[in-house]
Image (cartoon, rainbow over all chains, first blue to last red; front, top):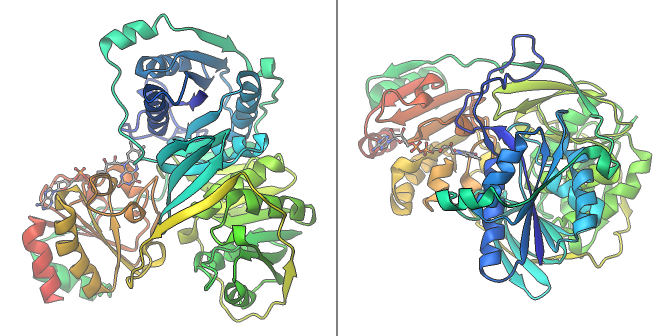
Length: 248
Length: 309
Ligand SMILES: Cc1cc2nc3c(=O)[nH]c(=O)nc-3n(C[C@H](O)[C@H](O)[C@H](O)COP(=O)(O)OP(=O)(O)OC[C@H]3O[C@@H](n4cnc5c(N)ncnc54)[C@H](O)[C@@H]3O)c2cc1C
């Protein structure tokens, strides 16, 4: 079974994002970028499936600027086999990403797509579900355990009340949550080896997908600032403060 | 104009977030119909009929709705959307799971987790873990929106809308429910609790999490939350996680115990009315947003606080 893993290059999760003075967006100039953390979890899961003999090939796809190639290389160093970069400098919304991925799925015929549940930049939490709908495939979002059982995939999901397990007919889309696994670090020899793995470069037009955004950004602003309050000396002082604030 | 709101419910009862999603739909404008898709969900449909400002409730029964199977809800909603201009769902694990499927089928870009409706095509939503607020204008003919419950005030339950029934789509679907592990608790539900007590990595074990956090929560009548680090380490179950990628809460009182205050955690609680932080590191970032900070060892402070309340 071939596994397709889409990855996104985003701001590093340790960086505090700064809003641009002209309110047009987030200032990403000279900011450390990294692979979306959920996508690392997706790759790790695919690699573990390959190690168990459940997956035969792992194809890593990114839709983004030329530098997204570095993100794909990290995935190849973690154990991916080859990459596809759909290169564009435009901002691509989840719907257009899902449409491009659907075309790639048509061409590649994977048995499974493993995507991150959300990208930590736009926090949309939509691409995997949209892809599943466009393909008419079943989905299991927010996965914390994945097990293959013949032609079905048993996926445990993190839901609001606890955990839920679904059985999906393959092919299917899974989106990953934090507890699914702990992604490995790419070792230096594997980083060297990954340099020789092939990456195809394409454009959205190659797939005939119109990526014109449906949402136009009116403005991006700072959230309301919360002022630091005060330190209290001890438990009695805390209780007194909470009482006078009417909180208890 | 007409809006279809997806109700969140447990079949036996309506979840509070439904009334908040209706409030967001009211801000959007037009007639509001509430869809209750469930299994033996008559009670939930009856509760939905009481929500103020609702034109009608559409109650659909089906075994596949017992656990809100995304494929089944998509098959139900997509054809219904020919009569609606917008679909609003709460940004819960159910709403987040199903809404993008509906959006894609309608060829619409979803507006995720809105915190404000500006007009019938313009919305505010937090991005980058709430470090920025983006105002977006949708050019799609129909809108598909998920709603952050904490940002809207629930509508009253003083209405009496008619309840219609509709047929469930024919299965079978390519996904099937197998089992669920849903913890039953008498504590207030985290997402809607008036008070929340959360524990972090400092609790160091599940035993100590239970021993120190739960009695304080019970004394306060609070829901219980946790940081990602505490959940990852197995000190608390996954559904306790508060933050960018967990639950968003905005209680009257939030008590963060042994939590450093990473931006991903703040994203889920910084709109709380009063924030208390207990942390032994006086430089911990959580103190920058706390109204009342107490520097010291939680293992001494928390039992004292619990006994004195
Ligand atoms: C993709 C992604 C998503 C994430 N999503 C979330 C999310 O939704 N929610 C979330 O919470 N995190 C999330 N995180 C993780 C986040 O970055 C932090 O790692 C996490 O919040 C830290 O948890 P913590 O504060 O419990 O642990 P730490 O940062 O280790 O803090 C522990 C604190 O306890 C204090 N302490 C230790 N001992 C004591 C004691 N005896 N008494 C008092 N204080 C003590 C320490 O001073 C320290 O401040 C995410 C990270 C990533 C990469």
